[in-house]
Amino acid sequence: MVKIVKGKYKNVSLRVDYDYNIIVKAPKRVSDSYIQNFIKSKQNWIDKQIKRLSNINEFKKTYNFKDNVYLFNKEINWTGNKKAFYENAFYSEILPLVKQLAEQCTLSYSKVALTNSKRLWGSLNNKKEMKLNWKIVILPKPLAEYIIIHELCHGKEFNHSKNFWNLVSTYIKDYKSKKKQLDKYSFLLKDSVLL
Image 1: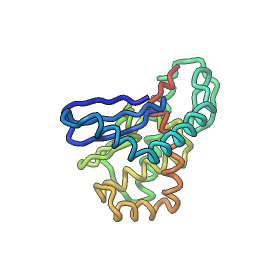
Image 2: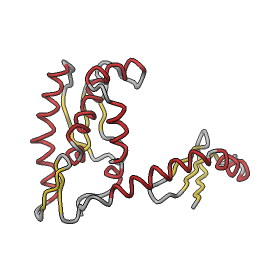
Image 3: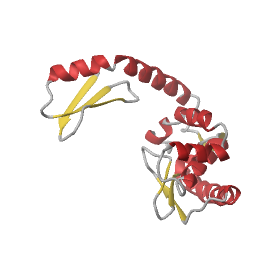
Image 4: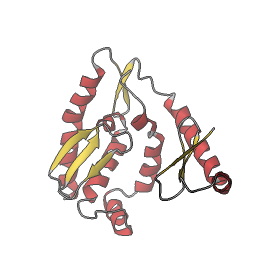
């Protein structure tokens, strides 16, 4: 299904959501025929996205958030308050991990806050204040470490330039593989795991 949204946008943009809808955002002045041609020109990209999302949706079925909680990808049968479990895990597991990795890599940060972003696993501002998504505790530990080191590296390179990725690679040689693996878990950002 194609959804076209016209508004105060500068350019035409396109994305595919987890239900395989094609969402096009366009400036009001752009004609419908231009939008149709734009969609046709992006067909290969759309097909790749649908295949990618189909793989993610299949992978998602391997998790049972109704009956379990997950700590570093290990399934734990749980009937208590899931929100409290994940918050406690964030403070008891993630905060010490940030401190440990910062010391190991000799990278600095000023503080860490928990966030519930539907788009990002983490961020670091120019005051070196780090925000980490609480769902990081669900990920396999090497991917949680990748996210933390990625954010710590922003303390030295505040961008995603070649220098930034070179810095990341000094601490995580296979960062490209980690980045690819992390994409499979992107459904966690959008979905509720507190069923």
